[in-house]
Amino acid sequence: MTSTQKDQHGARSQRSQEADKPHRRKGEKTYSCDECGKDFTQAGHLKTHQLIHSGVKPYSCDLCGKSFTEAGNLKKHQLIHSGVKPYSCDLCGKSFTEAGSLKKHQLIHSGIKAYSCDLCGKDFTQAGHLERHQLIHSGVKPYSCDLCGKSFTEAGSLKKHQLIHSGIKAYSCDLCGKDFTQAGHLERHQLIHSGVKPYSCDLCGKSFTEAGDLKKHQLIHSGVKPYSCDLCGKSFTQAGDLKKHQLIHSGVKPYSCDLCGKSFTEAGNLKKHQLIHSGVKPYSCDLCGKSFTEAGNLKKHQLIHSGVKPYSCDLCGKSFTKSGNLKTHQLIHSGFKAYSCDLCGKSFTEAGNLKKHQLIHSGFKAYSCELCGKSFTQPGNLKKHQLIHSGVKPYSCDLCGKSFTEAGNLKRHQLIHSGFKAYICDLCGKSFTQAGDLKRHQLFHSGFKA
Image (cartoon, rainbow, N blue to C red; front, side):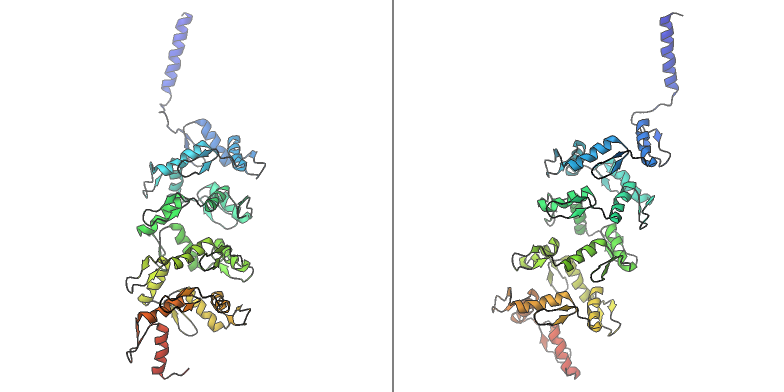
């Protein structure tokens, strides 16, 4: 056999051996991880992935100590500390350290969600996001926190959670000094200071800094509340809100205030409460000067001055600035008062109102006026009282000019001018503008003399 014939024979033999190998289509994932079952198209990718299970992370960040399995991932991470974000979105101005991250972000604006969940129909812009979402349906949470027992579907989620227990908050806001455990949380927070809210609701015009927040908000308009509480039947638009609500029934309040001992189901609620003790109220109303500890509370307050009350009661026509206030009001018409006082039998529609009422029986009045010494069971009542000393009466009646310290008092006064008397005595037929006046009148019929 000549050398040329040998070469031809060798080539045929090689082709024959290749043909004997199982045929693999392009893009097929033939390499599987023995630990978690994840599949890969290339052996190198599987090898890289297996480093996660080994726990070996030889590449560490000099600035924050975070470790990585690959040098490339460390390099990407270091861009966060540099602050350089050369890739910007033309639609919302959001900046990124990598071109790939910008590309992924732009899918949000496109509205294209090519990856759908077979179990619930939820759509995603990226295959990875669908993959993560499907873990929720599996119910498998192999990563547990040693300190509190909370379980997670991903190792990364557990790692992020553990930062809460460590107390380390390495990322600070230059504008307000607020600290965060993660760079992403700081980034989201900084959008508040920018004032940019590129995502608007088509139904009510409310704007949001993030697309996700708009999506959550839109569930309110849909009326769909698929998550219900087994104990009280209350429904929620999101599973997370149901989870938070269920803590109320458990009675577990692991977060306590060092100053007054008040306990909370969530760390965030304790943080908000502690602002009361600090006395710091950086958010002031331009119209009446009232100050607030949170921007959200100021926003809610400003609705009072706007006069806009989009939520109306179908039974009596009373309007409200917030949907929550309407909901609370509707309990009055239902007549259902699930919370009763053990001492006097008085019933309430809300647990909070019962709690406030019980302070009367305790006789404990922790809030005192520095000017006249009068004491109160609640800080709100002291605040109202202090307006008397200030002499400020920002709420005036258009018909007679009489001024009031509170908007509610002006509203009650205006009923006199309207002539509308909705409260009628069953015994003598006399009518009253306010329920309290009717109650006082009924004491005459009972023979009770105060």
